[in-house]
Image (cartoon, rainbow, N blue to C red; front, side, top):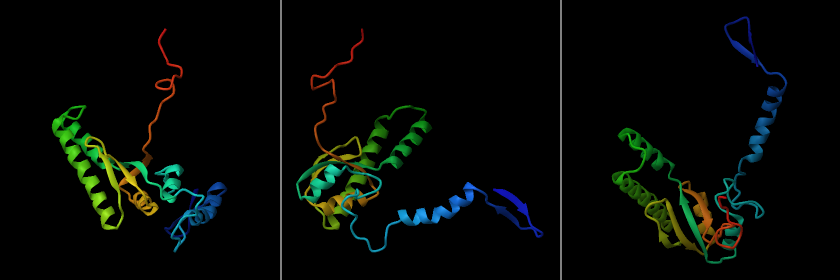
Length: 180
């Protein structure tokens, strides 16, 4: 962009090359990536949410109506930022007991609010494990609509399939790293 002064006091800019093409393409790109009005369900070949909160395995099992166990990770960045501010104010680099208890209370409030809203909207979810020290619960769902509700809620950071993971080299007889 090069500024040009016109005869008055108005400052104008002239766009050249790539900048001009970018401005021509930008409205089309925004239109292509915006949701279409009235579109109730996404196309089946695409993930439910562009933020990819959940794997296709979980989505497909839920669509089939299978009871699926999931881990629901809550968005708790604001809680973590508040913890950092309080730690810095106290001059400590870890959570003391008072801060840990505040975090537990805040996590419980976050989880309770989401579960209450979920049930008030007519969805069912069976809580299997409610962790106290981290913003995660493990639950069982049987309806795709419940999964959709969770995905669309901004308080949910991610939904994980609740399954056993055996990292290579540790539990399944794979190579183990060692110091020689």
